[in-house]
Length: 444
Image 1 (cartoon, rainbow, N blue to C red):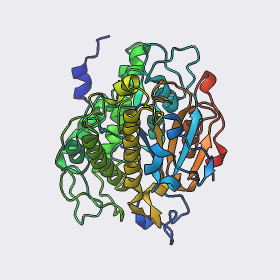
Image 2 (cartoon, rainbow, N blue to C red):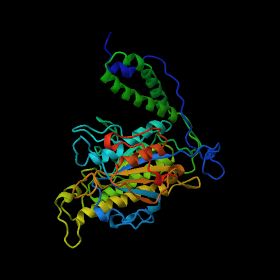
Image 3 (tube, rainbow, N blue to C red):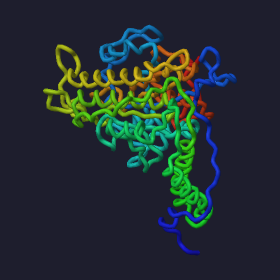
Image 4 (cartoon, rainbow, N blue to C red):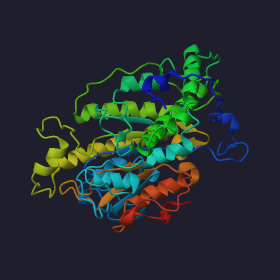
């Protein structure tokens, strides 16, 4: 039997295959009061993640009261406009079990996979891509991933241990990808099928028909790699079909009028905040236009290199080397960085909250998981960790609560999100992080 090579696979030799996709969400399908589809089905719920590095500063970050109407501590004072839209979970653990505690890594990996990473290995499939398998196939993009750090290596989204989901790092490039020449405005009067897409779809169909025969010629390890490869091609095939179908009008979709100008790509808190705001607003509108139903944003990497103007040390170095101020009782500059991160979390949530949808806002039909890598920034511990959930997931989640996890695994929050998004898994995680119960205080 002759060997297959990459050139032969990419050429394709036979006829294409048919594909069907769901229509995008239409305001036309709503019932009379805008809360559900005309046939009674719920409005589509989208899922997103947001990540930042280096946790918080103990009592400055964790409220003293639990339940609703809790008093915001200093590092969360910026949350006032969104407090009722977010559930805050504190005092969680990321149990390493038999694995070593990998600083800046174990914490966020457990939060997003429920599994403590082995020494030297990457994370397994992260929660966003698990959910994308269920809800991401009917849109132009299976998922959207971006980072405000200006570094394409900074992502908290992984397909598997060796395959990160690389983010877009430039606001201008992100705009062109979402709203450039290939964007199909659902509210435009005219629609023209793109001849380039038709040609690409034909070639891709030929490639896809060779999947079965190719799988029979390789070993187990290569079959796993090829399965991921063809999964990506199937998603691309759906995207081509979507781009060749005239979209229906969407009232909440208002495409940006002009491209943004790229800001400075330095690591100052001012530049990161601006890049984050620009990309958050682009991402939220792309979701409103039903270009994607799964999205990810990185504010800062786990080894956060954010810089404070007039201060010599970046955030990560600061947490190690800055002495505790005797008068304040905490690391003043480290706390400064945390407060800036929380301000950008507010910006991210508000980007969805300010877009009207139905008789509410886009945030009402979104669930966003916010994670970090450690609990107390100064010690880099993976106990005392916090996790956030923003949005009401189409009415499935009550918001505005502060919930003490009482030392339980942070994976409980991820599992609650999975179930709210319709992933029917009896449990999530392994060993001490395994959980099979959702957090009842946030369920409707």
